Length: 59
Image (cartoon, rainbow, N blue to C red; front, side, top):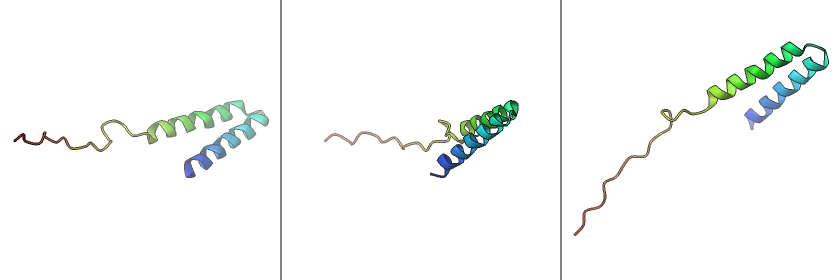
């Protein structure tokens, strides 16, 4: 839930700057949000892997 409230806060901040005529600052805030969220994602190499098991022996 923390991520959603932080994202909402950034969007509202960007809207405020845009309404005040600071369009470039607004764009920078939104670009910064994209960089942060891209870095928060797990990469395939960071994910835990399941151990592989051999098939049970046949009798």
